[in-house]
View 1 (tube, protein in one colour):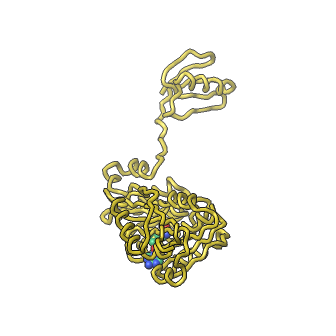
View 2 (cartoon, rainbow, N blue to C red):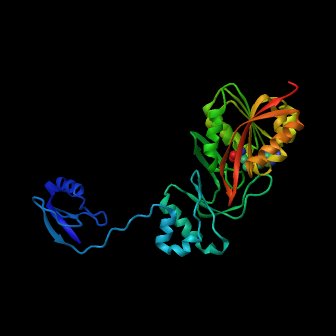
View 3 (tube, rainbow, N blue to C red):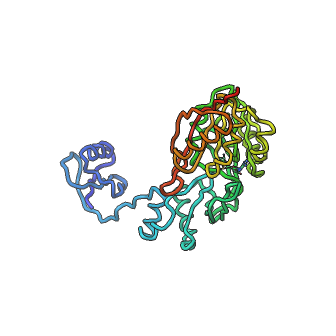
Length: 339
Ligand SMILES: C[S@@+](CC[C@H](N)C(=O)[O-])C[C@H]1O[C@@H](n2cnc3c(N)ncnc32)[C@H](O)[C@@H]1O
């Protein structure tokens, strides 16, 4: 490789000139000895005080920038294609997905994750799909401390969660901020299916003069929700453990200025009770898996059954759910006819 040899005292000036004239090579390391600096260059140019010499050197290795790059470099593209492409980071836990037939790659994927993200303390592997009423999935720790509990920071809030015992998705952070921005000070906000209370926390952070009620069936999630309220020192969130179909008729009929419904898979079963919780003029945010027409048809049907009408103010795709299937959100205002 060709190197420009210069005395140390003019090294910086020459480096800038080589850079400016676009001859400095990024593929080789700059070398030094007691008196000289040696800059790798792509060709000779006339510069005062510069001599050119050839040194035999190995090109510099580029550091991989992602887990995929790291794995590709070590194990080749073909193998890597079958491995995980995306993974989630919750606090200091990385959650990866690996096909069963590639189980022998567990430790290699974990090694790649740690190499790229040195702050990760635990790598956990998904052992199945999210299932059951609580929407949790089994997991196995494949690297690091044997725990699935962590504290995640999102939208300036701390969120403590056990990712194997309660639902939590980092992919909803933008949506949580969108809702928090829409909330007005003074509102009563009802978060159905509240999990460890991420929606409530982000709302409370942005709009402290609100009353937020969270209803969640999973006792473990409610324990974390209570811890999160303390952790963030928010005093306007009440967490209730129970079924929305029981709790709302008992305590929250015509109570809410805003209802958030983050249970997209079976939202249709709970829209009726959301209407009952809504005040006249309240806004409901319905999450749904499917298309807008389908969701809006459902909204009009349930509105009619509740002697109400609706004004749909917006809809959007929240995130892809499966190939050609999205999680969507429809926002609408409820008008109750007899009020
Ligand atoms: C998709 S998760 C959403 C959790 C949380 N809102 C979040 O964004 O992280 C749905 C949650 O609804 C809860 N759930 C399911 N059926 C329920 C019901 N009938 N009443 C109250 N909570 C329920 C589950 O336990 C689960 O935690």
